[in-house]
Length: 286
Image 1 (spheres, rainbow, N blue to C red):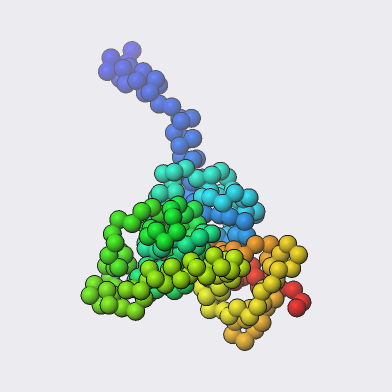
Image 2: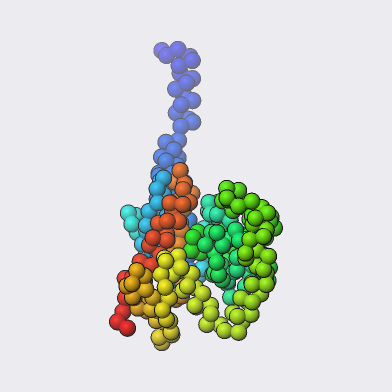
């Protein structure tokens, strides 16, 4: 006969251990390392994603028809939409991206609110996704190096704007007097007037944002039936492409479960390095 205490321990072990639940949790934890959150809209073709401690370039099977944040499943270099992202996942994703303060314009565009944003590379009207608010309202955004994402109302009206967590080489006084700070609201108003007077500027600004990020030059664009014919050049090489939508073809994705050692600079460099790849692969004869 077993001692009483040993019989008691064996009984408790059998009743409390749920191996199926443990195995399910371990499997789900492993799967989550191959998933990432990314903002998507028609025209997106690639995702520069931070997964398991390093940046990876993923080819998106198909962009969803409805713009929004999505959970993507990945396998090697491919990504597919699994489901819309939950609010908590969206909030966590945006916290990884640098902040920028901007003035809203019409038709999903924004204008840099100070010299701090210009240092980040936001030097002209840029598309801002999922924005809420009235034209010329100042809002908080997040910037992935190409795209702006709405992030709520402004918490800090200082032109420093949380730039690089306070690591800017400029002092507050220098930024207050820097070109593009004192006149930012007037410049935003002028940009808004231009957009309202010429709706085609929306397409031009969107194309220019992508080309600027890729250090390329816009040569010409026009409507070709229901598509956009775009001519651009980089390093002396000209390209002509037909686009279904004027959109940034590369966005940033982040694995919330695999964000160990996240490096925004490395991920932004990967995004910018490949931002023009989908347009190169779509070359057509002029």
